[in-house]
Image 1 (cartoon, rainbow, N blue to C red):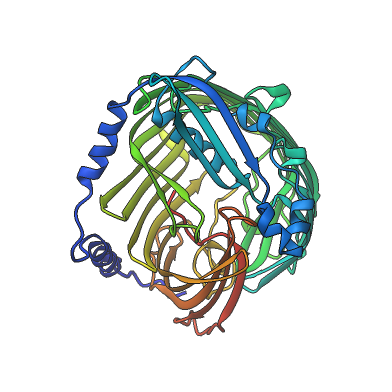
Image 2 (cartoon, one colour):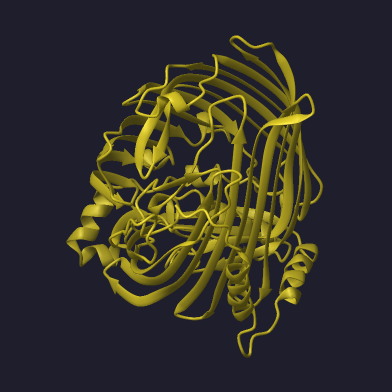
Length: 556
């Protein structure tokens, strides 16, 4: 690659103009007041006594629609409607408790977040007593049974797979799945997994997974009691895993070195939350133990990889964080087509301060201070304009010097005020370094957001990526299937440490988006045709077609 140092300023200036255009559409009113009004609404809540809780679960297709469609009848027949008890157990209030309208709104968001429903509606209903209100819950399921073959073609790497699964077993919200996939690089993965949403009717969930890859077997078991609602006060988790895997190192898309390793890990954490729902503090304790056994590097460039000795690391740390909530918005067209997406507006951070006892074969033991910090900020600077800013950093030190670190910056802007168009911009920066463990290699290509170039084509330790999209709702549908389109421009820079970013790598193209709230929920099928605009070291690249689930970038 050409390693000339190239200023990134013109591209960030271009992004600034793009963002500025999004936030100054003619006739638009600023929404700083809207965010303030949302916060004010949280403070002006009227409380009622909760009467009855009425739950009305519906199948995928209503009866009148199923009567006229053979496909709808078949899909309904293969699906167990979510049980009312499953829905009821997600709610945190009981008849006689005090309830507010925001509690109903929050429960509606939580139901959508489960991924079980195409639609969810929760509202307070008046009774004969003005001080008492009933809670009316109505849900419409989505298709949760999957069977068949799948495939993707991303960055000249093709893969095929078979899956069999149900993510709402007998209407309980539990998930069971089995699958096998293999790609053109000879990598394969077979897995069986189980998820219990409500262990013994509690708010504890459990996960279990076993499988095999070309490197060996893996297994994981975990239990978690998450925060269930904004005013919930306690959360904890316990996870353990073991896996035989490998770290691969690439050059021009091909694996040139590989280090096999066996890793076992156990983690436990507990958290407490304080303060009102709109401004909470969280404190906690976290402990983790990792045991890694490294094999001998193999491949044509194996001699370039400095493999460490077998390593154990035991981490103990104190966590703390803060979240300021501005409010919520229900929107369509950000990351989905017609599916309602709940956007949380607010600012916050999470931090960990601790120490890790590290032991490496052939080296002396060491106590290494360990730190991590993640921040987020999401707001609506103008009506139907959404901005998300995120940053994270982690590292550990020894003798006053960093032995390893990773940082990431991320900014996303969506403009929804030009329906049926949604203008979207995303820029990110990632950097990683490791001095004691295996070397870190960041990748850039079709599979990492730079469409038009083969997967894993470019490698380095610092990556900058810029994606611009015009997402278009075609307002066309075929039965329960909805269609959208996209026009995009991708730009990426990557550098080996100390050698500069070099010139940009650019591509452009068009794509198709396919979605269905009844069949896929919030998921979107992405099909992109991309054309690279740059040659690299005399190598030209052909246009690529990629097919996969999910957008290249999301809002949150």
